[in-house]
Structure formats: structure tokens, C-alpha cells
Image 1: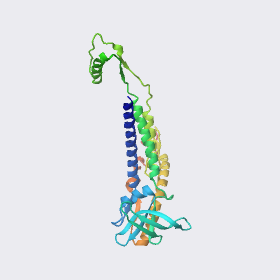
Image 2: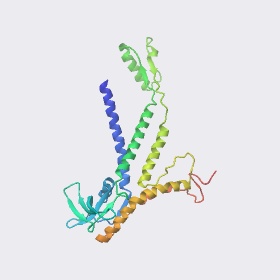
Image 3: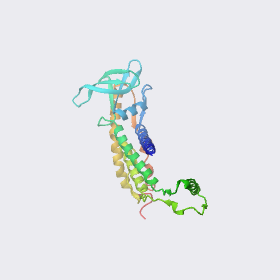
Image 4: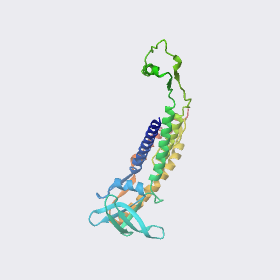
Length: 296
């Protein structure tokens, strides 16, 4: 019995971890796919750049005499200027022993946001909240089952098991011996309230909060009636503000890179993400609600 409890606990922990990893991977994929870089040199990997900005918060762009232009992880230390920007920075690759000490006049630091921090900590927080709600939904849905209690002697075990197999197999009728005690079959009710629908609404709200943090358009308003266009527009304000911090730090870095190395690099918010919320706008310019034309 103790072993069975241990197995159930282990199975639950595995499912918890899988659910958490699923949400973390989904949000990470969105986070590192939001920005579109154009005209990057072949020696600069866009995926590596965005993934490591997401994880560490900063990268450094420089020119290697042999390889060419590179953008790698960096350690900032040493003297700072009057605004707290590092004058020295060390570029390195976590996949080999490559290291290079750089200065402010031969390299450009790319920050992930104005706080000079990463995004992974916030995404992990949202992933934990989402997986927790998901598992509560599973538990609540499972609690709606009506288990059957079979009560009898050891001699009746086989008879009762065969009866249950017929019951579980949706048999139209079940034959029982005249000596069968009908009271041996009992249905147990957990009396657990059904709240999956409310929990799903909460999960949707948390997911939309995560999208807003990432700067992805969404309808983060839970209403049964139709949404007024102004409500949708106001809701997008937080989305645009979240988008601005990370986009501007990248643009500022790109401007310095182009001036220092003679490149023509561009970075923008990916158009596909900008248009996510377009379908939420009224088709009729004169309509003032989402989901229908005008007030009825």
C-alpha cells in the first residue's frame, strides 16, 4: 500500500514537471520569436542572440579578426561611466573556450530591456501559475467521477469483478446469481463542486497577462457581453508599453552597431505578432462593439 502511494506521488510530480515545462517552452518560443532582425552578417546567429538576451539580459556585438562579426554572451565588470555603463566587457561562448576582452570603443552591448535584466524569470513565474491552474483543473475534473465500491468476501471477489467488467463495458443488462447481495454494490459520491469552467477562465486570464508582458496583442478582459472598441484599445496600451522597452534597447544598440561597424542592420517587432489582435476590431467602421454591429 505504501509503495502504491509512493508511485502515485511520483506520477503526479512527473505530470507537474511536464506541464510546467510545456508552458515554459511555449512562452519561451513566443518570447524569442517576437523580434525580426534584418541584414545580420552570416556570422551572427539571430536565434542565439534572442535566446541569450532572454536568458541573460545582455549580449555584446564586436568584430573578431578571424571569424568576423560576432554577437556573444558577455560579462560586464570593471570601471563604469557616469551613467553606470560598463567601459570593459568580456565576450565568451558557453559552447567552447572562446573569450575576448573588449572595450566601449570596439564593441556594443545589446540590453534585453531598460532594466538591463532578462525575461526568463518573469516567464517562469507565468509558467508556474499556468501549470498550477492546469493541474487543479485536472484534479477537479477527476473528482467528478462516481466510483463504484464493491464490498464482499474473498469468495465473492471473482463474481464482483465480473459484474464490474459488465458494468464498465456498458452491458444492457447484468445477470446476477440469486445469492448475490445487491447491497454489495455501492456508488460513492465525492460531492466535489464543478469549478473547471471558472478555473479555465482564470487560466485564460493568466495566459493573456503573459502575452501582455511579452507585448503580444490579446483580449485580456473577461466579459460575457460584447466588448466596446474603446475597451479593447485601452487594453492594448499595456501590450504596447511592454513591447516598447525591449524594442527600443535593441534599436539603440543597432544604431551604435551600424555606426561603429558600417553595417545596415535593422530590428523590428515581428508583423505577425502586431496583427494578432486585428481580428478583434469591428468590421464595420461605424460599429461600437466587438462581436456585432452596433447596439441592439
